[in-house]
Each structure stands twice: as structure tokens, then as C-alpha cells.
Image (tube, rainbow, N blue to C red; front, side, top):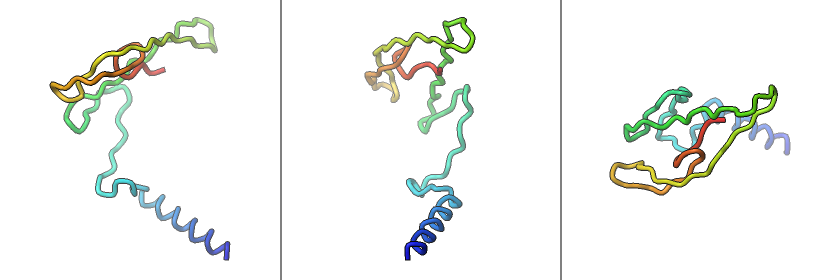
Length: 97
């Protein structure tokens, strides 16, 4: 009996995998991954910020050191509406490490 349940579970997993696993939002199309390092547009037509690469400050090979500072500020996600934000080395998001 247990083997039949296990087989049914494996078949279900296989079907969901082959179907693309888009079960959370079945009405929305799958979006291709965006290119890293280029600005992309969000659903409102605004460019999404791409964080800068944080520079390694340790010259020793095989070791890295970075300086991160938490900062607060405001960001306009919607025109005319400022939102308090936190970020690292800036008021929103942070650098890529």
C-alpha cells in the first residue's frame, strides 16, 4: 500500500515539474530571467535599479573585505509618493558582493 502512495506522489511531482510548476499564479505567464548588470523595466515602466558591485578593499589574495554602512532615506516607487527605506551604502537596496 505504501509503495502505491509513493508512486502516486512521484508521478505528481513529475507532472508538476514538467508543467513548469507555475501553480502559484496560474493566470500569469512565466517571465524570463532578467539580464544581470542591465536596467530592466518593472510593471509600471520604471527602470529597476541594478546595484553596483562592491569593491574588495583587502589586497590579500584569497581574502575579501568589504565596508557596509546602513543608511536610511526615502525612495519614490510611485510618482509623488515617498517611502522611507533602508539600504547599505545608500538609501535603498545595497551593493552586489
